[in-house]
Length: 165
Image (cartoon, rainbow, N blue to C red; front, side):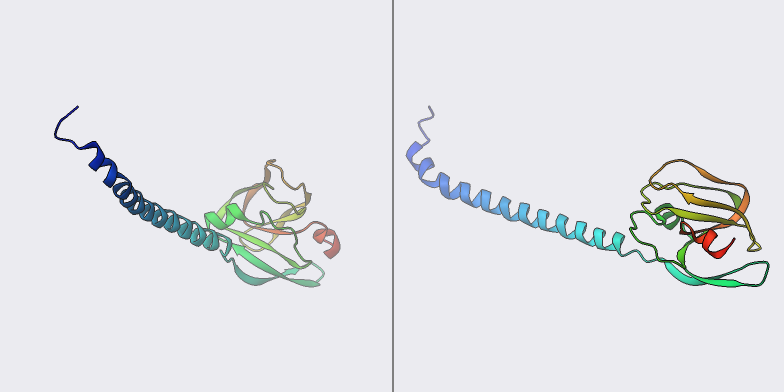
C-alpha cells in the first residue's frame, strides 16, 4: 500500500465526491433524456399533423349527371405513400386524389389501409379509364392501372356502384 495515501481521508470524501460526480452526470443524463423525449414528441406531432391539401372534384357521367367529391390531394412521394393508411372511416362523397405529376402506369396497394376502397384510374384529360371496385384492405397485392394515367381517385367501396359508373 502506498504510504502517502490516507485510506480514512479517501473514505471521508468519497461519498461527497461520488455524489457530486453522480449528481452532475445525472443532471446531464436527465437533460439528454428530456431533450430526446421533447424531440420525439415534436416529430410525432409533426408526422400525425401532416395535412393533405383539400379540394373538390366533380365526377360527370356521360348522361350529364354529376357528383361533387371532397378530396384530399396526395401529390408528393410522401403523401402518395401514406395515402389513406390507418384511416378507420371515410364518409360517402369523400376520398383521396393521387396526383402522379406525369402520365405513367400507376401501381397502388392497400398496405395498412383498413377501409375497402373503389379506385378510379384517370388519364391526364380527366377521363376515368379503369375502375377497381372493393379493393381488399390490408394487402400488398399490386393494383395496376395497366395503361398510363395521371390520377387515382380512392373512395369508399361501393361508390362506383352507388353513382352508377
